Image 1: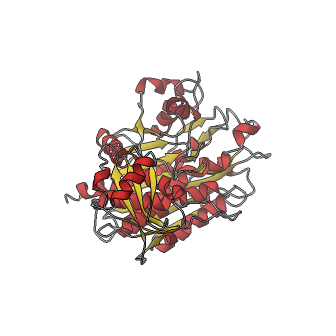
Image 2 (image 1 turned 45 degrees about the vertical axis):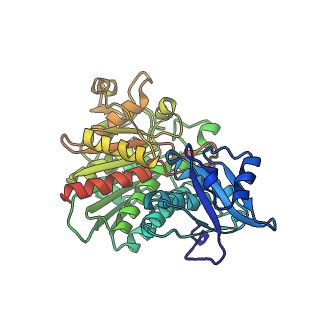
Image 3 (image 1 turned 90 degrees about the horizontal axis):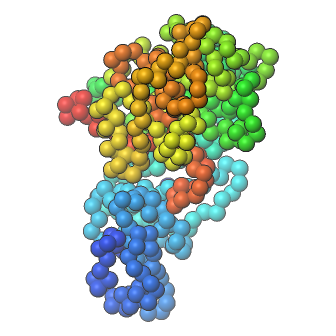
Length: 462
């Protein structure tokens, strides 16, 4: 992917970006280009591409129409439309717009090629001047990491492999890492992580990463649901429902990639990352419906359905994260089908107990076109999680408002006054769009990162 960028290339073909709604073909440097574009039906609609020839019929320049509201993805569409060759952006683009175009260019080159050689795009782009190369590259690499982790089948991305990926990231940035495996989870009081994962051949584990930026700043805790495969447990899923469950560790992939972004950027904050990692399998020692579990915080939990396992492992991890007394906790999880029913597969559901944090995330999503949508932590629905035999029921009764009751279950393990946000996401593209092929996808990752950058600098007063 990064090979598609060049420091320079002699004779690179000029890409002439034209903002949709403001296209003036009369300003093209060659009058024959205007006539060619008009004859080719170039109307200035976003995403339109027109290849402009020279007098000998060779490619001389490229007209490309973009809508700022569709960045960075419109540039990914451009990649698919160009013939092999070297290109450079030409025109008066501000650094932010140019950076978004390069990000789209990079994501347009993404291919999951671990098991099958994929056709490489022969298009290369010269770095525009004035943009923050490091920022563009770290975001592209983070999205690629999320996609690669999710796309990898569970046979090769079980608990041990996902933990190894986290260890690799932590070591690259000098973070402190602790991994608890199997019965060590019981010894260190992560009982629900152990219970959910104990039936699998690949033992359950918890990865805890700590990192401190060079400058002192606020404390951020990230938590990600790492269910590497979800059979549903004894409440087994049907075949179609189980097919995509390699993506059920998408929350952990997001949390890990966000931690990488924070560390790579050297943000002035203290970081804690918690990844509870399991496979929800079936065996003689699998946990059962109506079992009563005890969480790390001492709460007793009545299991309503073994297929609602993600919230159980998140509960222990959230408890631990809150014990560190961070300024903010963010958790990411492919948690409920109900969120997909409410918002579809492409818009993550945000639940947050802090209005300022929620609005900052929403605003960041609007700005960089990585949206999330806020859903209510409706307190009156908490009674739906009442249990006759335990402190809380894991799923409750009735079947309605499932994304809300799942978030309220998690909130039970977040202390009063602790700022916290929970993102319930699909982590998968069901349809191909420019720069977003079918498969694993980062959703809300870039906007979370943008929000955190603003948040940590505001907390420092800078």
